[in-house]
Amino acid sequence: MQIRDHLFPSSLVEAVEMLHAEGGKARLIAGGTDLIREIRDQTNEFEVLVDISHIPGLDRIEKKGELICLGPLVTMAKAESSAMLKQDAPALAEACSWVGGPQIRNRATLAGNIVSAQPAADGAIALLALDARLKILGRLGERTLMLAESYAGVGRSHIDSSAEVISSIEWIAQHPGEVSAFRRMTKRKALALPQLNCAVWMSQTGNQCTAIRIALGPVAESPFRARQAEAFLLGKPLSLENLAACAAAACKEAQPRDSVLRGSGRYRKQIVAVIVRETLEQAANRLEGSQA
Amino acid sequence: MKKIRLQVNGTWRSGWAAPGQTLLEFLRTELDCTEVKHGCGKGDCGACTVILNGMAVDSCLVLSLQVDGSAVVTAKGLGTKENPHPLQKAFIETGAFQCGFCTPGMILSAKALLDTNPQPTKAEIRRGLSGNLCRCTGYRKIEEAVAAAVDYSSKNHGSTEDSTH
Image 1 (cartoon, helix red, strand yellow):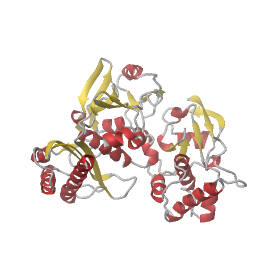
Image 2: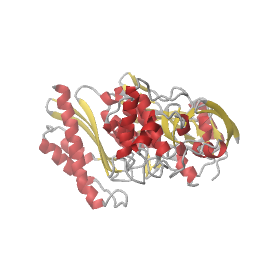
Image 3: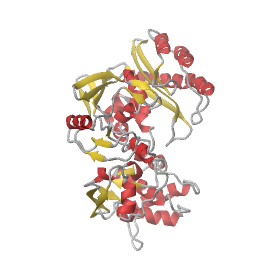
Image 4: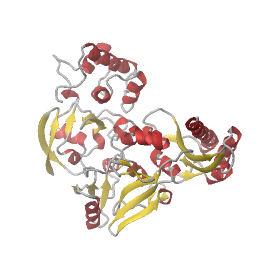
């Protein structure tokens, strides 16, 4: 479909008004690394672009009280190089460093990574482990949605980018005794889709795991929480045996499909146990390091 | 169509941009910057890399209307035949190309890297060039050329900055 107009609102409120005025025929654009491909392939079902990329101040990474908040224009490059995120949310900084190549990371945003709703989106996998929530601005005001609740299927989000915009991505900052980690299996070291990716966030008191979140992709229609594996580890010591058994539980509940690009479902299901164990071990090592 | 203005290699230029048109298309057809190469057209190969406001981007994944008022550096902005940029000199002396199609993008990714990290390690050079594909031969000589450019610059006490900044 031919693009009829490309609009530049000066605020998110104005962006939402512009989207509304087009009655579903407009789409929000920020980094554009997915949308511009749609336009090139002429698969786009929108004819107007509402572009927030020139609105100042939307690329901030800030700590507000106990929350870490990212604006909708925070790019992969900005997140991977942020000293605060490297320290406070290493899983996210690492995940972002894997997306595309440098040129893509300079444009692609985390908000876009969420709205594109791919089950293997590295940034979203890390944010799921961090239990991120989204502030979404629509014409009737702002609503809050857990990232985990934003998925409606492969490539489909409950965030309607023909009517609303993510205004903030937030999660509770890491306390002492908490840590995160990310790992990815891929055929090449750059410009390659993940065959599997895993992010872990965990909390330890004494020698016991007191809270854990394991996010995996692509093993389901959307970024997946390995809840049975989490339940297994909860309350147990972070011993190598327990981490391996937890990873085995994740392997049982993951349902990777056969994929020409990523490998057979049977193979990837076996590797789930490996990648989850490695990510858990990395997180446990970090906890040990931070206490030493 | 809308008239936009942007700085290309230090010179303000203007041209007509259409909604949905990529920066790549605008540079090649409207401003005749054919040194910006059209490879895959979808952000996989890096042949169309330009430096936009100091950052390497795939110009096929930027829309022309987004760059109104911006500064773009293409391969032509780095040096001349008589007075090549250290990166250009290093690519020639190392023989770091075969067909040459990926070279403008490679050199611009390398320049964006050296602008922020003038003394990169081998691993940092590889990572800096990881968004650019070469389909002729390989990456070893390209890496060597970037390392050689770092040497030229440090020996001359100069920088890899081009004259447009």
